[in-house]
Image (cartoon, rainbow, N blue to C red; front, side, top):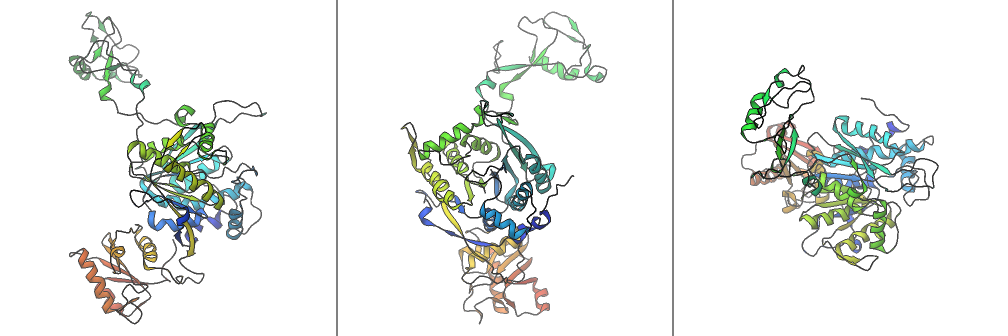
Length: 546
């Protein structure tokens, strides 16, 4: 497979492993509690690389659909989102990470995208997929980058979205009326959902002979291959209405003779309205076809909306155009219809105006689903004044530009902000980090499986985090066993090991696997560890970031 090279690639190729793990703190004044139940929707303000690293222990391997609309790198410096990758936060990050000043704008863009794509891949379920909007400036580079990160075998489609329905006379060049959406699965397990059949598709079925089995469509019984290539499909048939014998001279028949005779006996061969056709057809009943249609890779504006609709949505919600490049919610709903199930997690790490959240909420309201969104927005002003505010108004309802009341979707979200790092510059755990915060990181680091609030350690004062794949994982930290040792229960001793084993026995009486214990120190001999099937890992030194 060809590999794309660019200046700075070697500096950022493994950078996603070195991103500091930061804690997330809720900002209640920007959150919107749900009336019915605690909300699982999140909006995170902060650099999306650090935000993704912070979210990974909770959502790794759990996301069904990712949609991102990154900067297109057009060189247009007038946009709120600087698409020449000169936004201050990104510029500072490039300077610190790459440390070179000879990067072209394409090098900068690729350096920005590569570690983010590598982190995003870790969020997807095995049957999950990522959709990325892009235009002509970087689509060729992005396709190569995605082949490298996701594997070219997991490329699914390059969708052409008709963003405009009129041409522009204000250009000397071609009018750009489409944008690209690159679609990759995490593995070959991703399969797109069927779309609802349209009335137009169903209208192609009729019932001219009043067949009691319902409406049908005539499918030619001819094949595209010649009789010489498929002699088993070349035979003489007889029209039962006329007695005429018909041979397949130029094209072979569709099926072997035994199949034809069965179809004839089942009254599934159609000889035309007058019954005299020399080229028979097979009846295909609507009840037999897929109860849906496969998506195609060209989405016209009638199917997926256009930029004018996107701008109108913003004006209706805010009363003014306050965001330059929104996507229509119709486009996002089409993506979700194709790539999500009703109980999916949807991730968007370039949230912008919050179209993804609106699409999730509206689709849930329409089909009764429980999809949850996780958004990340880097720009503070956009995150608070646009993204969060748009979601708030969509949830509660609003009056559009024509004075019509738009009913709210209901729901809510938690507004989160990046906090302090889990580890300081010396690799020590930051003072004040709580047991549960470190537990999530340790468990995902060890197993690759997120630790939820319902897991063992979150429900009781026990060092046992959980059992995965025949191994138990335990954490001795921050006084989880306050009175069991001089160090507040942070050391692995005979006493703390006995408590860990008792906790395991309470969960599984037949457990016979290994036990991985994270703690500040170990007072057991190597022989005792081997006898007990214990793997001890010292914190923080053996918590390698990755």
